[in-house]
Image (cartoon, rainbow, N blue to C red; front, side, top):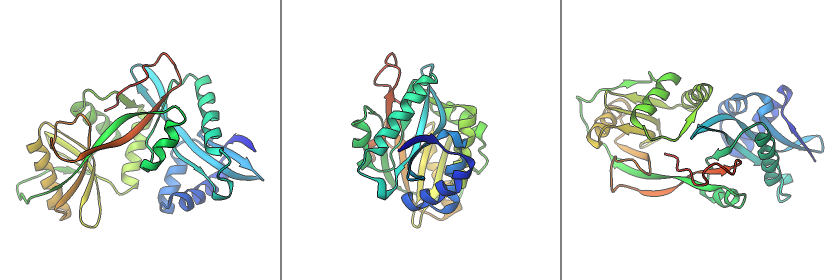
Length: 270
């Protein structure tokens, strides 16, 4: 077993493994494997092949502290039950701590994975409120679509989420924007509201929704209905969002681990 980082020659293999393990399209696997530099993809090699991997190449900032985001932690089926994922994470944590990073943030793809991270010292810091609402027609509702650039993402989120604690670097916002459009996401923006959404068969999935009030949020969603024909919205709201109060229920969303013991152990991220 050997700890190492990826090289350019590994990327095609990593893309193939990503598709096999996570079930994503080859297009998204290509994006995920190339979103950061190869040396920011950490690996365990065994028998001259990749046994486990994790990507740690997106910088974050919170309370004047520097952290990073991890994703794509996976072990090949034939190498599971050996503790490789835990060992790889410990290796990455020690390396990043030596480089001056002070916390790690992750968003598990499945709720069943939360216990794995909690057993490694991660704390749940963010809960999302998920609500499903019906969207009534409003022929007068208008919005600007797909005009949000990386700079606009940063500005819009700052405008509507002034208490947001965690921020991407400029490069991070560029990666986030690329992710949105690579995955088929769309944005809608009006003077008083903004949302990021994806289309499914019978509804829109709203990942970001900020507005000055619920009526403004509804009006924006009505504009999205006129564009997509979808009359139902599944909305993800931060735990402190004042929109659609009383709708939906809370569920865990993000986890954080403090590498710097001076960093407050229970940062609450919006």
